[in-house]
Every structure is written in C-alpha cells, then in structure tokens.
Length: 136
Figure 1 (cartoon, rainbow, N blue to C red):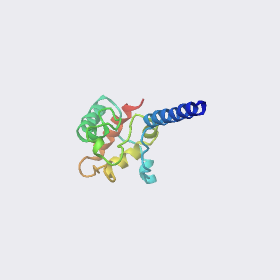
Figure 2 (tube, helix red, strand yellow; figure 1 turned 180 degrees about the vertical axis):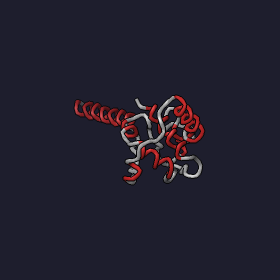
Figure 3 (cartoon, rainbow, N blue to C red; figure 1 turned 60 degrees about the vertical axis):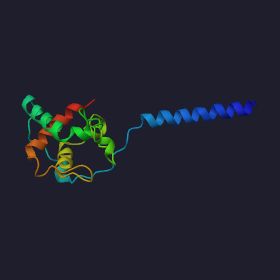
Figure 4 (cartoon, rainbow, N blue to C red; figure 1 turned 90 degrees about the horizontal axis):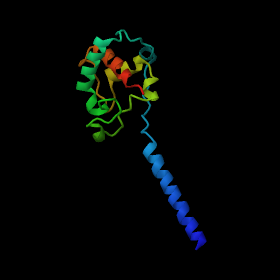
C-alpha cells in the first residue's frame, strides 16, 4: 500500500511538472537565414514620432492580424497558421538586426507574405522601427 501511494504521488508530480513546462514554453521559431548584405543593413529611417506613427498604421493594417496588436504572435489569424508567427517582444526578435527584419518583411517565406511591391522600402523600415517598440 505504501509503494502504491508513492507511485501515485510520483506520477502525479511528473504529470504536474510536464503540464507546467508545457504552459511556460513558447513555440520556437524555425531558423530563417538572412543574407549578410541584408543582415548588416542600417535602417535609413529616423526613429521619431512621425515615422513611428506611420509604422504603427502600416503594422496595424498589414501585420496585426497574425502577429497581434502588441506583437505577441496572437493575432486573430494566428491560430489558423501552421507555424507560430513569432513574439516580437522577446529577446529572440529584439536581438536581430533591423536589416534582418527588413529582409524578412520584404521577401517573406511560407505563410509570411512578402511585401516587396506592396510597400516601399521606406514603409518597411517604418514598420521595423515600430516593431522595436514591442520590446519587453
């Protein structure tokens, strides 16, 4: 009887641990290589109130449905995607260069649409600037 109680207690502890771990682990993005020529690009758009507002308008119109209003990857279309759209507030995103974000936004891949031809380069840079505001 004592061994049975220990077994049940141990199994319950393991299940609880796995449940907690599952709730706290964020989806991991798939690697997305960016050519060095883009990775090292400097953002030519100044960060100020005007460009931030322009970036916000574009982000809200083009990105928020998947990436969420505050960049957490929780937009209304996010649950319909095969891949997690990413959390722009965390270190993984924020530690990438502006050039990396420019490349990914301009050229897209898989479920991420490309904005080349839909937005000017300046507009993409404005969105990059705005998405930096999501930093935790």
